[in-house]
Amino acid sequence: MTNCPFCQTDGGELLWRDARLRVVLADEAGYPGFCRVIWHAHVAEMSDLTAAEQQHLMQAVFALERAQRKALAPDKVNLASLGNQVPHVHWHVIPRFGDDPHFPGSVWSSPQREIAPTALSARRARLPALREAVVAELQNTFGGAQA
Amino acid sequence: MTNCPFCQTDGGELLWRDARLRVVLADEAGYPGFCRVIWHAHVAEMSDLTAAEQQHLMQAVFALERAQRKALAPDKVNLASLGNQVPHVHWHVIPRFGDDPHFPGSVWSSPQREIAPTALSARRARLPALREAVVAELQNTFGGAQA
Image (cartoon, rainbow over all chains, first blue to last red; front, side):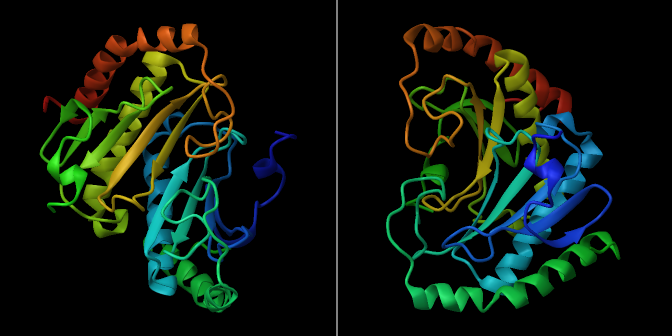
């Protein structure tokens, strides 16, 4: 689709990919470690995928959640597949902290605060560990396929 | 957990349940057909479940998505597991329409409009069909377990 950003670009810093999907690190203000799992093919809904494809995609989402928990120790992980603006299946996998800009609201809610620069720096410093954990968890889940 | 609403109540109108989870119809203003899949046990994250439990839960989520598409023909279905306020695994399965209060934003974003009373009435009139479709899709997915 020529007007779909997930058909035209990786959609973020590529951390892992296989034949069906990719995992990218997003660049969302206040949210170091915000990742997405993007299905390569342009389909709108999870129920447009086969059961095997759904399972493969969710295994990647849950592997990514495990990697975020290991590398970042968030207070909560948020998972969402919305696609109202970009109807191409993609999952937001978002490490949440009590002092992040929207907690306990969703990241799409009205912001409640600015994140402290020291907290932001500390989380950014964990990104190398997150990149390693993502690759390790996905290889552990699926075997050797790699970006 | 005595202070957890999903441990204390069904969390909505019960449409289907089995030994591990239940599907409820929520009562969210402007969103007839908004459903939730709630895991019975009080666990916070999807990665706290076993792979078999994760798969069972997501099969229910996707069955519910199919039921909403069949009964309501939404423009998009939104899926989300957040749990920042209630850290007990539950999935929001939300039929979205271009004229609903927040489209194309998330349902947690700032509202953009009021839904027209005629559109709201028309969607409410589909709730009996949705209840039937939910039971049919879940029985088709899992067999005869029933509320």
